[in-house]
Each structure stands twice: as structure tokens, then as C-alpha cells.
Length: 148
Image (tube, rainbow, N blue to C red; front, top):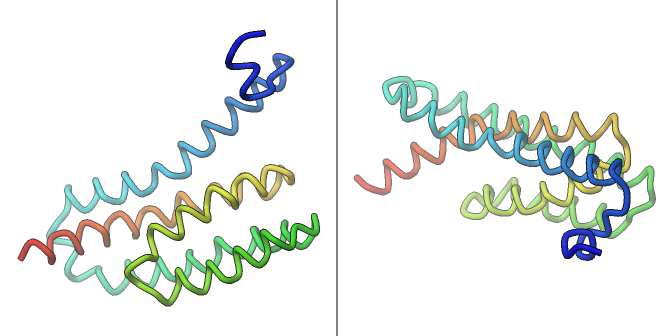
């Protein structure tokens, strides 16, 4: 038995493909942050007038990301996840200093839970990707304001 199969308990080729698909979904969903940051680098003149709209869009998608996660947690009676997402969602929504870090930390758990329900899995990953656009742009704006 190879070391990879030992640690990840991959026994069949189908399990390996599911594992690779999960990794690719995670990488694609979290790439929104890098793309948002790159957009802010490309068009810095658009960031100042669009800051309020980016912040509004970030907050709307932030709330929308937690809806499928909470729904799947209730469907599968995962009450620890439900409490974690509820408390973590409120904290990351209202405490601005740790919003991004806590949100992406909880997103890993959301995607793993959403993998139980394939229809929610892609919705969850897409919403996390959409959250990354304004979050990455606002991260760039905040880093510029800290330098000045």
C-alpha cells in the first residue's frame, strides 16, 4: 500500500478521482481572492469610486455563502457545523479585522460539508469564488491605505 493511499484512504480509482475533483473545486473557489486582487492591480483608478459597491457586494455574498452551508448542516443533522457556521458567520460579518481570515477558514468546512450534497457543493464553491472578487479588491485597497 502506498503512502498516499494510507493517509488518504484511497482504495479505488473512483475514490481518487473524487479526491482530485474536490481539490480542484477548492482551488477554483478560493482563486477568486487572487483574481479580485489582480483586478485591483489592473484598474486602481476604479477602486476609489467603486469601494462602497465592492463593500456592499462583499457583504451580500457573505450572507449568501452561509445559507447553503446552514441548509446542508440542518439536512444532515450536523449540529456542530451548524453552530460553528452560525457563530462564525456572525463574528466574521461584524468584526472587520478578522473577516477575511475567519471567512476562508470556515469556507473549508463549508465545502467539506457541502460535498455530502452534490447540488450544494457547486453552489457553495461558486459563492465562495464570487466572494473573492470584492474581498481581493478590498484587500488591495486596505493594503494601499495602510502604506499611506
